[in-house]
Every structure is written in structure tokens, then in C-alpha cells.
Length: 524
Image (cartoon, rainbow, N blue to C red; front, top):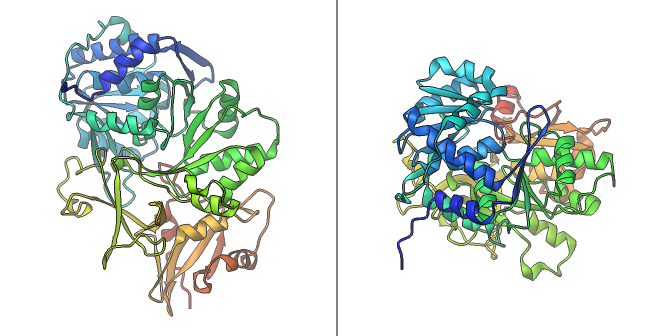
């Protein structure tokens, strides 16, 4: 057999030759719509690749992007890696000081910056060593006009780095993860499988998940490989703008974090029957546990299919997908919903196990342990870090920090992050399970549960709750709602009604901020 390298340029060349007439659509910052074909995309991507060498970019050098989801960012996804350089997406929601640290840690040589994000870059730039800044506007267009198209006439080692992302750093300094061409190609193939996202040329894909967050879950690579029509939302991620694109472009597939879909659900509920979303076959949700009530509401009230998935920056990011198993096709609605609300099963080539202080835990849907994972797109270490060896086992598995159960069908259910589990009187309480249940209450928009000190029990749960507009509920109402679902000792001792729950840059609940806010809370 030929030793054919698995590289991103091979995906690019395939799309360039086979799908030249397919369309890429972007909603710009000014809300105008930009359209062009894969042929246009390919020609411009080659020019971007050709422009990098005169800027001093050599194979292995990092080229950063500070940008929203749009066609120019897509050009960078392939144009940078085509040259042997490394695409480094910067999370624009991080603090400028944190971004400056990341830019310097990665040693970025060039940064491509959205024109609308220049004020943010100007806060970062003085603390960095970046040699060239290209503004994704007139500067970028002139750069392409002046560049000779890159020939892409050589193969390179599939194990060389193609892209780079940093963890969000909620538990310490951000950590860099380098993805090889091989890892990204295999991840892309897996994403497109029917057991994962089942993408094809017939799809119209709208990635709501940002291209600066975990490679937009691999969707830019997967859509291009399959020749799907791509619809990019730009910076407009409000429910009205997203729904407009779903309808206007006949989107079939989309993906984002739960908070995005909570907003979309509220908009649909406020205007029942107003939008034709009949083309939308799948809405993938990841980044945080999905409340069963959210899955149920989309399906029963709007006929839309939510698919739960789990992953991390360290897993490129696909780790598990929760499609309903065939043997549950005739099960009760309750059993189906219970299964779909789990984080799901791993795709082919990804292996999972859970371990606690007693060793590898049985697959019984009851025994909790820390999820460990390995596979061809799972990180084996962090860039430029020698202090994280404890995240990897001696036999080559990555320790995720997620506390899970695994059932006899290999479905994972995340019970909590290790740091968020509540230990009350020697027994563990899952904050995620309580949050998911609370968000099933008709008056609750969002809920986050944290531990607070208790003289008697060590820790007890406190629920921070955001009520829906014009809705009302008392602590007793919420406790009574939870009581049939959990053991008595699980029920929160305190409920605090808040205007909003703090979030990380990835849209997850920032529980460290809640713990700080309620640090002086003391229960008897």
C-alpha cells in the first residue's frame, strides 16, 4: 500500500477539485451577506498561503487568528496549515492579559485580526512579540492581491503540527494543545460518520460554536471535506440572527453550547409556528451538560432534534456522541429521553474507561470514577509544559477530570467535574444532576449548584437560580419539584435567585465565580 500522508492539504485539494460549485455564506459584522463558491475559497486560500513566506513564516511557526466565524477565517484554517505552519486560534473572550500570555507562550509570529476586534488586539499587542499583524479587511485583501498562489506541490510528515488551541484556564494557566495533521484528518473522518455527525454534500452546516474554540468542534474541516454548504454567522450569535440564517439558508446541521440553544428555544416559544425550520435535521449540543428538559422542549414543541455530545480541547474535541441506540427505538419516551440526555458513546478508535480509588469501575451506570480516554486525536501532553504529568496515566490514557458513570451500552454520563462534586457527610452529590433537574422547572431559565460549608455535614448544595422573565418560584417550590427525583440529602439547603450566572469564555457556567461570591455562606 502507498504511504499516503494524512494531511489537511489533501482535504483541501479534494474540495477544490470536486466541490468547486458549492457555496460558502457569511453574515458580516455589518450584517450584510457575503457569498462565494468553494472555487473562490480555494483560490484565495492558496494566495493566503503564498503570502505567508514573505512575512517570514516558516514550517512549524505559529500564525494566530483573532476572529469570528467567517469566510476569511476559513481561508486561514487551510491556508496556514498548507504551508506547514501552525494555525493558532485565539479565544477573543479571554482577558487581554491572558491572551497576551497565550500569544507569547505559543510564540506567534503573525496575527490575523478582525477589523472589529482591533480595540481588543491593541490592549494585547504591547505585551507580545508578534512581528506582523494583518487586519482582516483592506489589509488582508491587499495581501492576497499581491501574493502568488501557493503551489502545494509537496507532501510533509502527517505527524507535524497543523493547529493549536489553548484550554480556557479556569483552573490555572491556559495550556496549549498541538494537533497533528494526522490527528485532525482522522478526527474529521470520524466526525462525518453516521454514528457521529453524519455530514454529507447534501448538508448545509452552520457552526455556532466559535472557530476559536476547540476547532469549532471540527466542523470547518468536516464540512469542507464533504463539500457541504457552509453558513458562517460572523459575530451575530443572538437568537433572532441565528434563526434568520436557519430559515434563509435552509440549514440542515448546526452546533453550539447549551446557553445558545436556551436563547433560541425562548425565541421559538415566543413565536410558535413563525419559522420554517423543517430543513434542520440536527442541532448538536456540547460544552456543558444538556438539561433533559431542553431536549424534550425542542422535540415536542418545535419538532427539532437535539443531539448531545461531549469533548475537550484535549480531544480535538469529539469524545462521545449520544445517538439513541437501536435497541431503544421502541422504548418509552422517558427511557429515550434518559438515554439522549447522557453524554453518549465514543466513536470508533476512541477508547474510554473510568477509575476511582478502587481501580477501574464496572459499567453499571452507578459506580462513579474519573473518565480516562485515549485515541488517535487525544493529546499525549501539553505544549511547553512539564508540570502536567499527572493528567496522563502511566499506561497512556488522558485523565479528563470528569467524574462519570458508564453503563452496559458504553454510554457515558458525566456526574460532575472532580472539583465541583459536593461531599456531604461522606456522600457524593452531583451538581450537574441537580442543575439539569432544576432547569426542567417551568419557571427556571438557568441554574448552577455549588458546595457551601456546613458545620454538620462539611458541604451542602446551594443552588443559584435565574428565573424566566415574568416567572416566579420560591425555594420551597423548587425543593418540592426536586424531591421526587433525588434522595433527600441531595436537596439543596439554600436557593439564591440571581440575575445571571457567570460564564467562562466557552459559555460554560463559571462556578469558581459563584464560589467566590458565596464564600462566606455558612450553613448549620
